[in-house]
Image: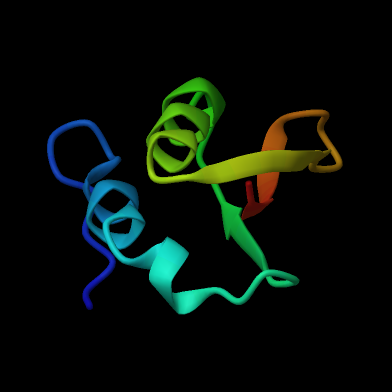
Length: 72
């Protein structure tokens, strides 16, 4: 799968979210890097595909950069 953002930069996340739950076992985590101001959209995309946001990690400038999800 190519890492392509599309018009809003979220195309990859939408495509990947379609299969992610089936690829994870019950103790797995899905961790992704996001761009500036993408947290809310990415959180919604992956929660709609059956994952639960566990942790948000900021980069050295305080920008939300890493999201960690697990199965609900």
